[in-house]
Image 1: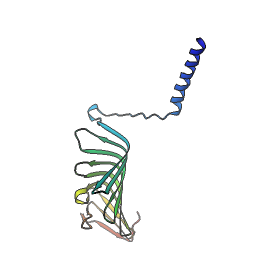
Image 2: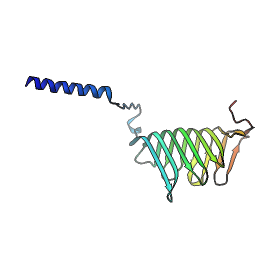
Image 3: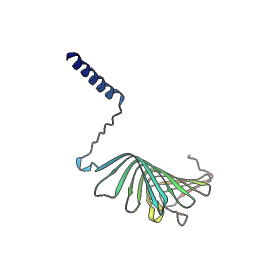
Image 4: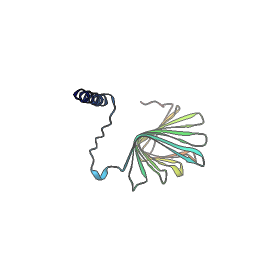
Length: 182
């Protein structure tokens, strides 16, 4: 009986040792108050939004959180694509939120690329509001729009995809044939 128990002990010991050395464990350190802990946390999540059977929006994130009493999903390190008729808009953001009721998005420290008619327009801003039901992107923070033919820098911007117009305020700076950073 002593040999059997020592074999069982050795097997359990090696099983514990194998588990500790060769399995990946995720340790979550949260230094926030208990009232600020989200109700739901998702890792490596993707959200797809369809309208009348057509894919309109795809958002992926490394981490997403949702509170029970809120319709907002908060994303960390998110990226996504929004599809229009013949064009699309890709974005990367360090932090973002998506309201599930309205489709309104807030993107922090974001980088967008808009493709239309074989032209690519790059947008870089610290804060972007994406109003999905009006097809508008608004930035109240300094913004840069870059193309292969120009670069525009402004304090604020409103980009209307339906009308294909961009409105700037406070004297935007326009650089022709200067798409690169100086």
